Length: 127
Image 1 (cartoon, rainbow, N blue to C red):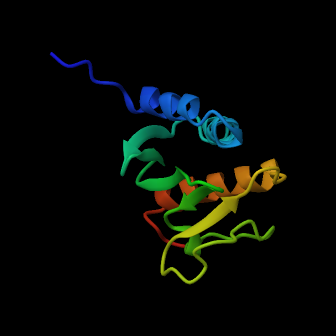
Image 2: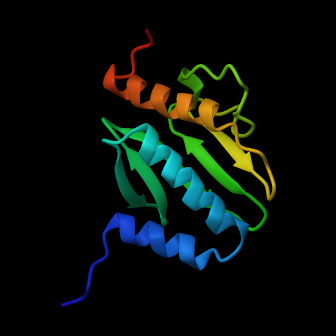
């Protein structure tokens, strides 16, 4: 029987395989997400890391020159620090593209994760 890896193991493998700044950034984003939403579930969909809690919360994608943190319902979330810098024309999703050396506003990012989880808990109804 084939050894099936858990989503968490697949994410760890991806971090290891991205042997440059993208792997370090993915590890940091993952840690932030898990700290912020301890009940969140790590999944592996579309060949990428996905976090869910009462629905899709966010996913992290590695590209040649950037990392993308996609919030599936980002258009419905408040973004007072204007972290979203990609996918701004999409109907539902919003994303943050990170380039090598970018500063991360960790508290603002944690606020976005908390907002996304809270939004899913309300069944997608704005408060």
